[in-house]
Amino acid sequence: MQIWPAIDLLGGKCVRLQQGDYHRETVFSDSPVEMAQRWKEAGTKYLHLVDLDGAKDGSQVNGEVIRQIVAESGLICQVGGGVRNEETIQRLLSLGLNRVIVGTRALREPEWFATMADKYPKQLVLGIDARDGMVATDGWLETSSTSAVSLAQQIAGQTDQVAAIVYTDIARDGMLSGPNFEQLEEMKSATAIPIVASGGVTTLDDVMQLSASNTHAAIIGRAIYDGNLDLVDVLNTCPQS
Image (spheres, rainbow, N blue to C red):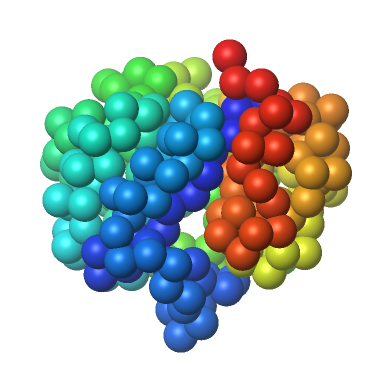
């Protein structure tokens, strides 16, 4: 199972939000580039970047920081947040990112996302952020009437070029309460697209349970920042190929 340490960017800083609430922000570092280097030294091959400014209002204030992280770390990086047109996809891929995550527009225009996935094969990730099983959009500020499972199935029925689905249970994100294993199993059963678990991964037991259930990858955020998990221990538990 791949392990993707998360770096959430807000105003050029490394932060974490609780349940996606921009008013419940904790700043962990003024230098996301140094944080990326810290996780690289721990042994990771991957980095999951979230542009919170982009997710909220589509701004590109973190573009230079993202470029520096990719260039200086040399890690396999993916980014999400505010990716709502092909121009943004092209711009982000030109920064050296390996994968770009699309959420809000994929929900609103699944056909467009499927077309983009075919045009950029295995470079686009479907980001599904769910609240009570329903897809949330616009930086988690809105909740749609579409279920997470139905969106995944709709996309899978139109293209086989999606690299993965990052599934985030908002109720668990940043709360150190463990993943929503039931919802993850439902998502894994819904399509053949690899599922990346995001939100609530807190203990080595969580990591081992996700790995034992053949989860493709796990994103770990607040737990490694607060010290509940040591990334070195996680990577020893799940050696990266």
